[in-house]
Length: 91
Image 1 (spheres, rainbow, N blue to C red):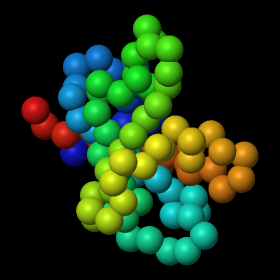
Image 2 (image 1 turned 90 degrees about the vertical axis):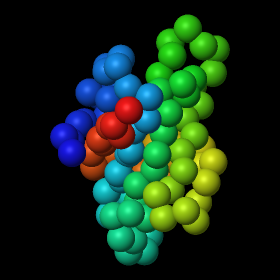
Image 3 (image 1 turned 180 degrees about the vertical axis):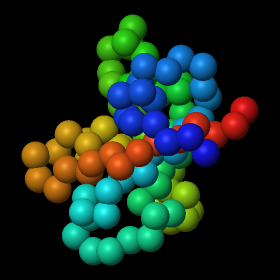
Image 4 (image 1 turned 135 degrees about the horizontal axis):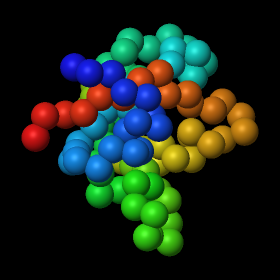
């Protein structure tokens, strides 16, 4: 697994699915890495500048938190989720 920054993920064009892992201090209680990891799709409006919206939905890898509007948490003034790293899922 090659780790990427979030900027590198946004700039990459040749991928379908990726995982975004958020830092431990993004949350008010401790979570294991799998619980802080969300699978996203390159089809998300967030990665397509031609779309009017910029939503980014993700599913937690532990299966407990699906359809989370990650872009809201990532730009929130309070409790902002900070990306630790990302990685691509093999095609």
